Image (cartoon, rainbow, N blue to C red):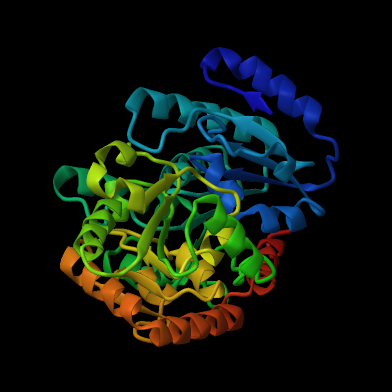
Length: 399
């Protein structure tokens, strides 16, 4: 792993990449993302297959992620540049020029990017360095719920990605339609692989594990009669976490024996904002590399997000036999089949969230039926082996 944060590091970049290219006969792929967490969460199975055939360098921000595991990237090159998720003009310009330099030296045949900022600087850098194949995977659009000039700028960034990329992928039909309706992409340039999803679900990991259910519940002193509601993901307002907490306050006054688990990196310091009167009923837990364990310990999964590319966590929860309560927004409408595998509400509508959760809390039969149908749907449409093979086959076209 090498860290490059300034223009003065250009000689180090040249020396490092030149010395580390072991097999010059292999086709080179550069993977770019704003955070290594995105790569670790979504691309490890694909990378494990691709690295057998290709020479891979992963360029990302390797800092500020406690669960970063280098063993996931064996036989790959890891290069750090300080890509920020938000708009940081001078830092972004520096990252852009560093990435151009890396592309010129490394000379990848394929540049693949994900995350909005990763896609933006990668599409420009790979275009200017004349990388032949430039692929971006569109996840959720950050401008979806923005207004004014900020929305315009972020939307323009996606249009630039679309124009400069040679190929585009997206995760689901509703997101594809959204991109087309907003004139971000041309229909002939973008596609969905198979039934969608970027990485699919490993059904040998995501299933209702009774042993893990007992372990997690014992760890947090949760008895078997308690109904556990789970949120798992980044903790911020955009994900609807505050709405979920407010909804939980509405429900907790009733006779139901409930526990709310909120698991993920706390980006908004949500823990300090919880009402002390219900603090013992809400547990804020850090990022976990084993989300299936918490899903196994739970009874209902809730994702009240305002913006979601596909909602992979909802599919994973379904694979663990959990009914899902989520926002009725593009992306999630593909991940959850309303009134079949879960219940939906308008984004930001606390009363509707409360109503959906209450309906599942009081009706155990409905919880079990939706959970079972969710498992069947996840296995049928989003098996990881199929999804990963679709992606690898797509990349292999550019040999």
